[in-house]
Image 1 (cartoon, helix red, strand yellow):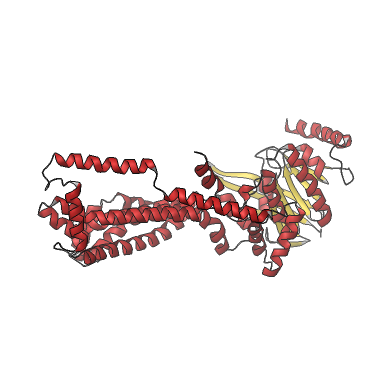
Image 2: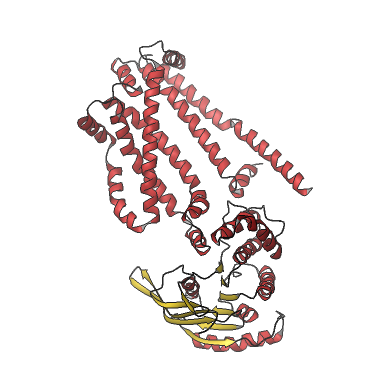
Length: 250
Length: 281
């Protein structure tokens, strides 16, 4: 009996052009309560599919998902999802985009408006409730995506390379804010990235996934919090892990 | 305060846009005038019963509309437009069910795809003859039958492609946030389908109107098709054209209204709305 989110023996196969294609087989993953876990790996290795399998967005051929020790259907626990692209409804205002998620989460009508205002305030978009997504910058749109995921008050937060399409300055600001929000809310975060620096900066622990869809290594990130992004010790950890990680990948 | 000025500015600019859009564009006016002039010139080379000039044509249109000819315009236009409307609505409903099913379900795509493409290849004249052979000379059945069987496959293909083009990543987002099917259709599918729905409506009305006349020529006792055929048999070129002109103008107006409605419904697209209108300044 372990608390937190656990996936055991996870197996996903897709129907490809030339027969079934195995993304990963017999994969085990475990996120401790309140832990920030990052899955790191090269493009196309299947790390996004790990999130989607746990979230119930792609069917599992085999495997079990447990939440706080109970076997559950994939995705039936409460989670928020921040995608690589903002994935907003461009034809709805920012507030309506959040309301869409809140209705899905079964939040009663009178509670929606205050919650939307609270979360937009917390991601620094207090004045943009009535704006349309296309009127916002890329960084602001991704902030809406983060607000939408957190507004449903999830137990688990899935994040799929959420900052990879942003410029360095914008990405840095969002990472800072994400760590602050995470520290306040204490959610489990399962984060996916191909950027080692980002993984080291944000996570409690990193799992390395190879081209074959298996975890071949993992490491605790021993640095205390709050972290200073420019701390040379983080750079040192990144270098040390990089040697291990990239040696394995070849 | 900023909110107020923002609204005022927004209001003024949309009013300006609207005025600019409502005013006829110089090139469009020029093209209409060029066609009319060419028509008039061509007509001088032929006897009026073969190719009537503009004045003669205008007189014929007046005869048609005032009901001073052999046929009552209210009855004939009424019956034809009624068939167009019923045929179009049935086609659209059938096409929506067919096309949406194909768009969301791969199994339905396999099952319904081949019949659809087969229907697309059947010539409309064949449907018209089959309609008469099967149902005889009926008041409305044959024209509506022909319109539906010819029009609905086009619309179904359009709608199917529209659904296929819906951004699957947004559908996945809706699933991740536990949106119900109704919510997903309302907020994810329909807004993305709006341009397709408008385009399909315009296409459907345009073909339904043309098909309806053809079907009437073959298999109906009344309607604009029958009247046109009658004037054709009397070599009355002017009246053949004159009977079509009012409906052409009506269709033109409907098309224009639909485009305006579409622009209004897709206001959220700042790139489309702002970029196109402002760029030429």
